[in-house]
Image (tube, rainbow, N blue to C red):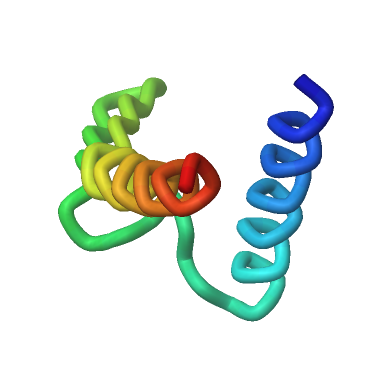
Length: 64
């Protein structure tokens, strides 16, 4: 369990570093944003797919 917590911390820290470097995580082309009146609907589909691929690769390397 401790190993997974360390990995999750490293992943979160890596995402934070990328955001500080200026990478627009969460605002990638293909993410859906609908603004109407006083409300905004945001669905980060491309960001979700990208994070899923990255986490799949990291976890597959850790299992070996």
